Amino acid sequence: MDRLQSQEDEGMRCIFCGGQTTQKKVTFSYDEEEGKYFLVENVPAEVCERCGEKKTYSPEVTDELLKFAKEQFRPVRKVEVPVFDFAASC
Ligand SMILES: [Zn+2]
Image (cartoon, rainbow, N blue to C red; front, side, top):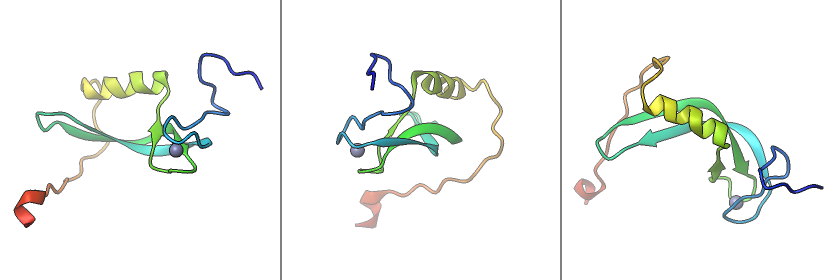
């Protein structure tokens, strides 16, 4: 199998554990220091089958996600996000 410098859809490896990844639709969460927070649903990402949690986005997808950060699009819906303070629970 050819391994080019650019990462192909097939045969990508998890950068954390080296496990096989598969493309899945995930919800991307974005947050910034100033409390800017939003979610993008149905984002294609490479998800590791071994460690599960780790998601890798293609450069094209990352570009698209940055457009959401620049508020170029209108959100399809808004949800209330509960915010907890871990320190306050002790
Ligand atoms: Zn992994």
